[in-house]
Amino acid sequence: MRPGRYLRAMAALLFGAIGVPAHAATIQITIDNLVFAPAEVSAKVGDTIEWINKDVLAHTATARNGDFDVTTPPKKTVTSVLKKAGSVEYYCRYHPNMKAVLTIAP
Amino acid sequence: MFVRLSAAIAALSILGSPALAQGAKPTDPQIAHIAYTAGVIDIAAAKQAIEKAGNKDVKSFAQDMVRDHEAVNKQALDLVKKLKVTPEDNDTSKTLSKQASEKLTELAKLKGADYDKAYVANEVAYHKAVNGALETQLIPSASNAELKSLLQTGLKIFQGHQQHAEQVAAKLK
Image 1 (cartoon, rainbow over the protein chains, first blue to last red):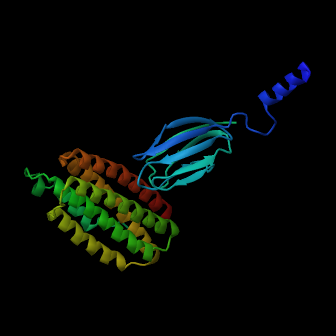
Image 2 (image 1 turned 135 degrees about the vertical axis):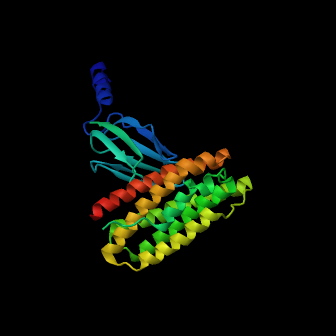
Image 3 (image 1 turned 60 degrees about the vertical axis):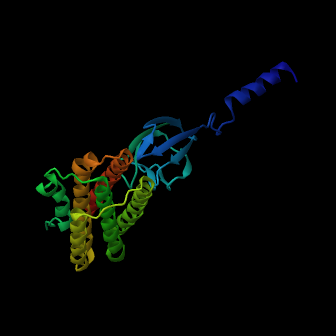
């Protein structure tokens, strides 16, 4: 393989094929004693959120703007993939005093 | 229509009344009994609502109440077992139960939207009263740290229920 080709191949690997998220990450948000932690999280479109519910109660993570609505059964972990960018306030529909913010970059 | 406060709520205010204020703060076995009874009362009201409610938000709110209060009461039972505490019946629990059953009978006579509104209004008022009793009497009186912490979690849950009930009530108007 000639050096030029090697560089182009490297560039393709580094910058990625169009449409594939460059660094899709998995981010954990824990629900414990009726608190979302961390309360403020930054993520990117394509990232996966692992919602870890440690309570004996069912909860939801419901976006105020309607972008997502995840139900987390008691003592279960649920995953969801972020599809839309934005600074999203979310809450639990069953316990609306539980609130947090997810900032999703494009 | 102004829905009058349920008698059970009046019973909770006994906690702040001279009956208990005269140096007779509730003991842990009594607190456990009162907290458990308050949960049982809300479950009974919710089961009636699941049968009778016409509005789908009201019905699903009632299902949430059954699920949450059963989960909390199970934790309470597990805790008293662990602590080897026997919940002790007392005048507050007795009055609560008696008056809650009168409220159930009263609600049973209502139908349709009238029932839905009365049930949700009572849920708002009832949770408010329970939260007030937890904050001012039960939590400060509890001596066991684990019981206190369970009551504090209960308060957070029931504050959530109160807000949820208020949202459902607002949508019914």
